[in-house]
Each structure stands twice: as structure tokens, then as C-alpha cells.
Length: 173
Image (cartoon, rainbow, N blue to C red; front, side):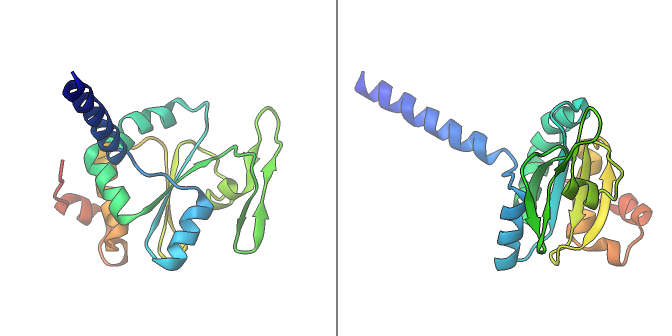
């Protein structure tokens, strides 16, 4: 009986570790910046809101796809940023805050990196120097997202037009 209980506990722990490894290890914006200072790599920012249906769908499909999870966790500092975040975020010596705006407000940092085009979800790509590379607004399925994350991580944007890259891309899915 003890062996069965121990086996059950070990299986449960193993399942929990495996489940955690099959998820994107989201960071706060500040955590990603701090990690980037020690070990520079690109930053992927998923800007969402709690009420956004397409954001939830992207979490359930794209951001839970094993190929996407493994690639993002390996090559990026992934950030989840609520576009209506109420907490202050300090970045480059400036404190960004929540701003009231009608029924719903917005967070200044989200508005700043989205260049005022508040559309959810939006995926932001920053290089290792924390410079904005591209905003990708809207829901993106896993197959297309795989291409996008490789395009920016592997720096194809510097030398290869998107259409050419997309045509020659070899998917891991």
C-alpha cells in the first residue's frame, strides 16, 4: 500500500513539473528587463486585457502549443502585460502609470509601446537592446506565430524580406 501511495505522489509531482515545463514561463516587464541586463536576449511582450476573448483564445491555442512554448522559453524573455494594468512600472527612469479613460483606462507603458493603437491582443518584439522591432496586433495562430518568432529571434528582419522568409520557412510543427 505504501508503494502505491509513493508512486501516486511521485506521478503527481512529475505531472506537475511536466505541466509547468509545457507552459510559457511569463515574466513581469521589470523581471525581463533585469534578466536582460545580465544575459541579453530578445523580449516578447504579450499585451492583453482580462476581458479580451481573442487574448484568451491565443493563450489556449498559440501560447500553449508545445513548439511555441519551447521556442519562446528558450529564445525570449516572455512578458505578459495587461494593457489595463493598475500597478506602476518603471522603465528607463520613467514611471508609467494607469490612466483613467472613460469606462476603461489604459497603462501608459502599454500605450507607449503600442504607439497609442490600443488593440488586444498585441505582441511586441523588442531586441536584446530593448529597442522596438515590431508590433503584431491581433490573434495569431500557432503556425504563423512560429514563423514570426523565428523571423525576429534569428534576425532575418535585417536581411530577408518577410514574404521571402515566409515562403522558405521550415516548420517544426
